[in-house]
Amino acid sequence: MQAHYGRREIVRALRTSDPTEAKRAHLDMLRTLEAEFDAARRQVQAEAGSAQAEAHTPFQRVATIEAAIGNIAAKAIDSFRDG
Picture 1: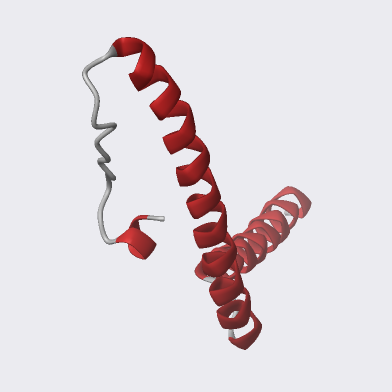
Picture 2: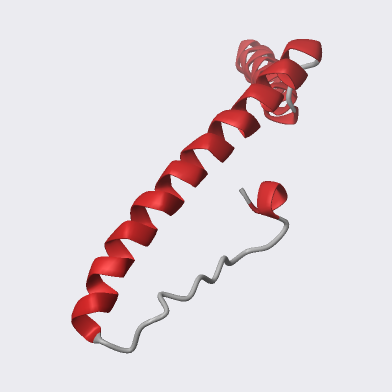
C-alpha cells in the first residue's frame, strides 16, 4: 500500500476538539478510509495479477531454487550413505 500512496502514514484531521464528536467522526473517517483502502488493494492486486501472468514472481523463483537445492542435498546424502 505504501507504493500506492507514496508514504507510510496518512493523516486526516477530524476537525473537532469535542471527544464525543471526535469518536463519531472517527467512525465515519474509518469507514471512508477502509473503502478507499479496499479499492486501492483491488487495484494493486489487479496490477500484480497482470504482471504475474507475464513472469514468475521472485518468491516463485526462490521456491523453485529451494526445491532444487533440497533435491540435490537429498541425492548427496543418499550417495554418502550408500558409500
